Length: 390
Image (cartoon, rainbow, N blue to C red; front, side, top):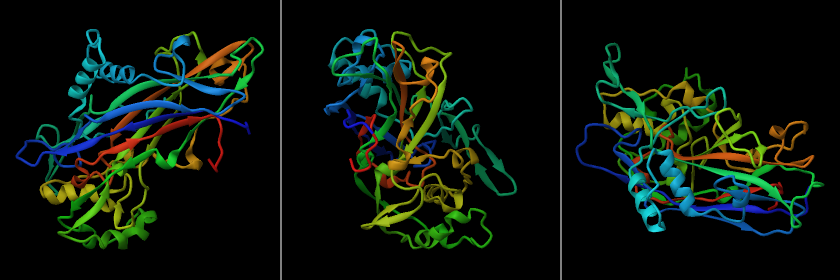
């Protein structure tokens, strides 16, 4: 293992949620009348300097002269706006960029996505109960809500990684670098809110014939959730970080539609299965309907609805942020193509694009009214080392 490393810390990406309690004609996904306010969304990218044989450098553009120890918050905000289809050509000051950014991202609905066969994310969607978006089921005597576009309800921006050495890259340099997430214990940090439980449907269910046997050990905890009392919930548990990891290309080339996505990763806050720690409930990740607190709460509030968590969501295989799941790029065995390695070989230096997504996951069991106005801080750190003790 390399003696040293260089880390990149993407810190303090803060969200808060605002809930509208008045009359409205539609739901905003699983959290009823839920909106995400990103006025406090801040990105500070910095490095923790370690002497190293080689180290990662980072860029917001992928241009050779743009790599360094930090990425401009203005660059990231403009990327988010461009990916929302907004014109940024007249935003020539930090104040103008910040104002436009805050204006366009202050009302974000919780959404969902799945992974396509080419490792890309599908179009994001959200739940809608407008009559023309869903249908009435005669047998259930319930309304089945439909899915509509979740365009512009998430944040998307690109980061680029390459390598460097203290002496610089030369024609003799040979580097074959992996990439890991690190500092994962602090990667998603939320504040604690309280949620009023209206009813406990888990008490009523007969789980004796349930096919999702892996979740049955957690049924007693779900049944013990108190009714008409406030419970503590963590806003971090309903959010997701997603990466589309593109194959490397020569550092002076440009990415285009022909470049392949080598891997796709989705990381969740909290745990996949329900638990309680220091009186704070973690109600689990994307769980089947009969174990999903947020879905049950939705149907309690709107008793005419029937909502089923789709298989596409249950099979998405989101990952917990931990040591075992931290690697997002492996050292290449075959160096015959620049698309195979991140580093330098035979005089060809490569770069890698990480298309990054941040969103509130609507199918998450913690996507409840109790996470309103609670900040979430993202601390993304990348390293070429993998030291479990760091």
